[in-house]
Length: 284
Image (tube, rainbow, N blue to C red; front, side, top):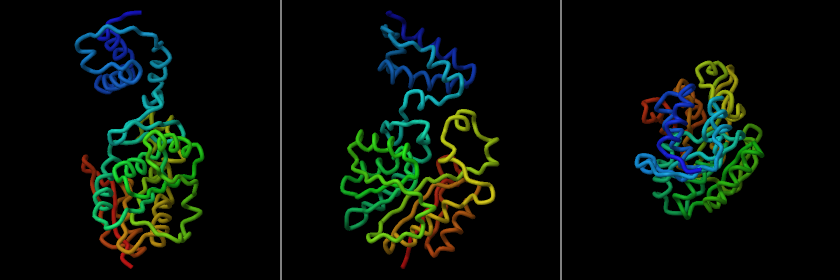
């Protein structure tokens, strides 16, 4: 049935503004129409006629129940690339993209192809993006979740990234020493404390995997301690670690790595001015 793209857009925006702000609703509908019908913003502005075969009723109902648009579509964006997502994986976040450039820049300064490890890879967006930006790097990625690794494998194949995916629980293997160390270890581990739940939006709390999000209030740095242990054993001399952190626990997280003997441990703010990352070096 041929319809006005402007009218379809306006009707969908009106439907979901019941639960989203107008700007959020517009962004969601643009993404929806682009992904499902191939409609660009320009197509909508010029009111391109469209033949709609899709029943948007069930999609609208899922969105009105606060289900993230990325899970509805099964796709999320990261660093200019599309990644498969599922309820077994976190949705890639724009702020996480900020760790890519420093890691790529460091790797390019090495006089050999970089060996890089991503701990807790989820969709694989960090590892796959780094591998795609550094064609000659050797990139490995760990995750405890078999379901998450299935999604990461789909993304690995989608982008022809050649990442080596391994099922591994870093808490259980934190004292393991490998034969060949890495030049860089990166991680975006679970870091949200249970007490922070009340600050979270329903679309995150009700749909994203708690295994990948939360840590206990009484041990919020459990994964950073494990990463510090693992990195101290498996980084080369002058090797780099780079982790995303809980903005409320920057100094405490930095201290974990300082106590483990890392040098030049630095807290880095994101574009919003929040403590978001920590980097440092292993000097043997």
